[in-house]
Image 1 (tube, rainbow, N blue to C red):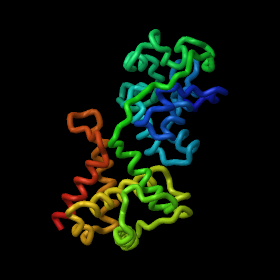
Image 2 (cartoon, one colour):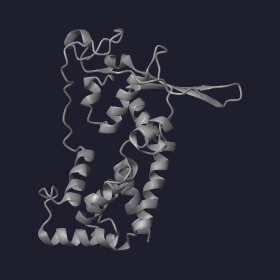
Image 3 (cartoon, rainbow, N blue to C red):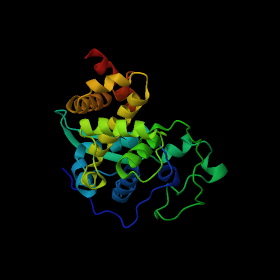
Image 4 (cartoon, rainbow, N blue to C red):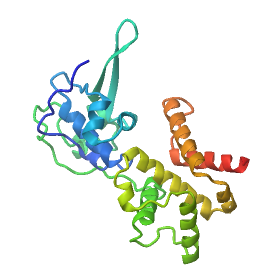
Length: 262
């Protein structure tokens, strides 16, 4: 198996990647790392283990980031197998043709931030970020804002809890042992942090609903086990007609179904 070549001095992260609301910040950095490792062959062949050590996460997290980049059309992944159908190499290509899917063409608006055929990655055209319609119901932003409040308790509660509701909800987190501090989560992997955020936000949604009484049935281990199962189903159904587009909604619905059974 090939070893990753020495990264180029420059990494290219075009505007449509930097400002893409659907990408996590580590995924944007990973895109740049892939461009830095794309050599004269025109592709990057570094393994998940290499990226995992670089960003201090598990290989599974890298796999999901690359899958997400490919789903959005920013990269193309090719798996090379031998005659025995054994995987020999993975090639990750930067998808320069993504510009054809943008709202305007490169020639009309100069939104494509660098010249695909230029030998110098820093030779760029006019850098105007792609304008995107803000999503009123961006669940990822809501989850992050609420989690920031729960952990740091520095900002106004984005859910506008009353003082009594706030006390009740923190008791729920304490009972389920999800009442982490900022110092404690500093050592969490990206994967575990994402799990915690989604579970806490799902508990909040249930707390604010008319089925609040179901919270008494919730158990920490079962919530975590359900999350991992939902993630596995999402991965298994990727690219099929049963693909899970909104993971939070899927997890929340699964949580309600399980609690109502008990």
